[in-house]
Image (cartoon, rainbow, N blue to C red; front, side, top):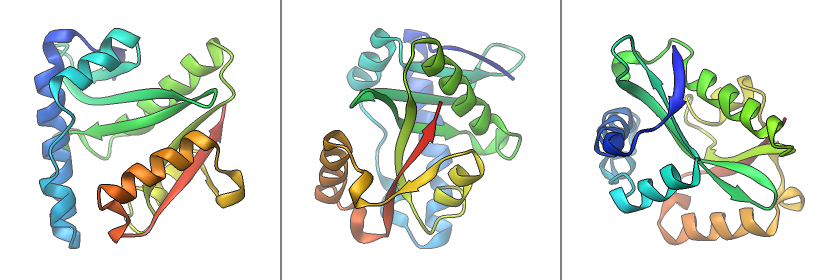
Length: 168
């Protein structure tokens, strides 16, 4: 699977990928997450313009998965990684995370961070297999604390969540 920067005209497709990937939350009793709308196009465009949006593309150069990241406290924070269900379980999400790690290493960024659900198999347990480690409260940076407060205000703390870090 080839990784490349997201093209501006692909942003609507990224939203479709995220919606499709989110449907599986309905099956595990998290319909609110499944129904949550992806980021608006103008916010996705911000990631594109910052050079922090990548796609995994198929043989026709069509995105089947994507990752967007923010700079948070000197690290790259995975804001979203979504794989279309038709392309799931092929290592594409891990490849996107590895791609981000190589990018981060190339610019001297020490780590990747993310926030995720602890009890969803394709969330925290998956990220642990990809080299991320749980952070306890003492390991949270000010930026991660802000992100967690924002997530709580959005209602995401209805289910157990955590912050994770992967050294680059």
